[in-house]
Figure 1: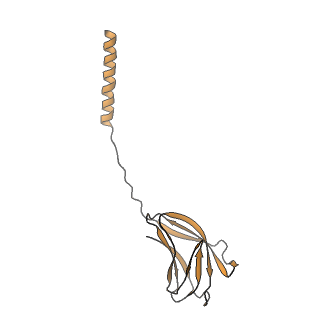
Figure 2: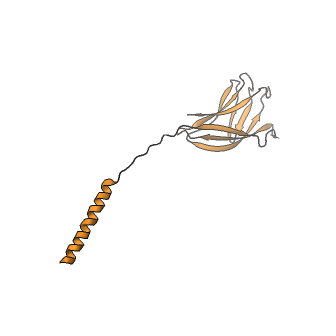
Figure 3: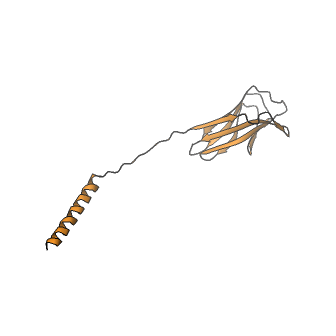
Length: 137
């Protein structure tokens, strides 16, 4: 009988201490808001090489964490580069002289590196600058 009582007392102590442990535990919910971050970097690797009328401009590395994607823009001097073709990987755009063009679009976050080239239009490369930028959608 004493043995049964000792076993019963030990079981009750275990259950009581377990309940106390659960009562003292707490749950935390952590929420993080990550800001949108987009950028493009240019690397001169292969710059100036010519092939089939196209001139290599090097490589660009795009990075954007926008959930709905982004656009890669080409900015240049308005009124220049009309008829010039810009290529980045498989994407290309023929410039109309407006000063800005969308070269490509991505439907979600992405990191990619692509080679960039330009094929001059009828007026040649008549701009003093060419800039790439990434805009979140």
